[in-house]
Amino acid sequence: MAYPHDLAEYRMMLSGEDEIDSPSSKLGIFQAFSKLYEHDRELLDSMMALDANAPLKVATYIQGMVCDQQVYIISNLATGKSKRFNSVDGLWTLGRDPRQSDIAMPDKRLSRCHAALQYSAEQECFILSDLESTNGTYVNGDKLKRVYALRDGDRIRIGSSLFNFFTCTTESGSVDIPEHASEGTEDKRTLH
Image 1 (cartoon, rainbow, N blue to C red):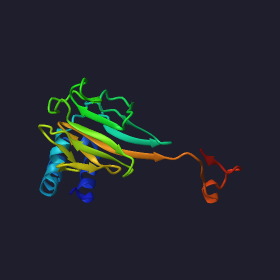
Image 2: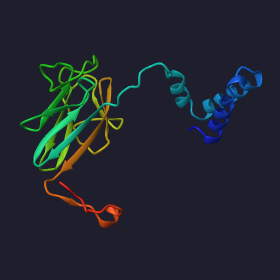
Image 3: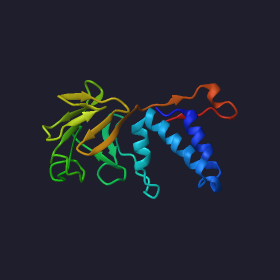
């Protein structure tokens, strides 16, 4: 764990740009990194691996949507851009082969048809299952043995791909905003 005091010292040392090359400044930076190494080597390794010129990586996700009794998913796994995936039976397959998978990803560690995501109306949730893949399916760091009822925010790893699962359920009708939430506005609003 990084300690705020250690990081604050490091930040103060870097605030004087013209003093960075002085021997005392270099010693201070070395001491700050030594403390960080003692307390949280993983964080230091991650910091050292960062490429300041690398483009910012987009977070990958699958979002399960249930809207007015229609079920679909939205994901950016296949192309890096969000796309809606419809399914008549509420079942989507994930893998590397576009002929066998609804969401095909260019990942050599994925099986052709690696895992399946299905909406269960009886349980009112999305269920993830491994399709006897070579490298397995993991949810929140644990290897999936059978099926798993996904929860909002679960982290999923298949092959080399790591992404989050989110769920959204909306019903038709309106939701009234409490009066105290709309103070300062002249009209009371209703979301549809």
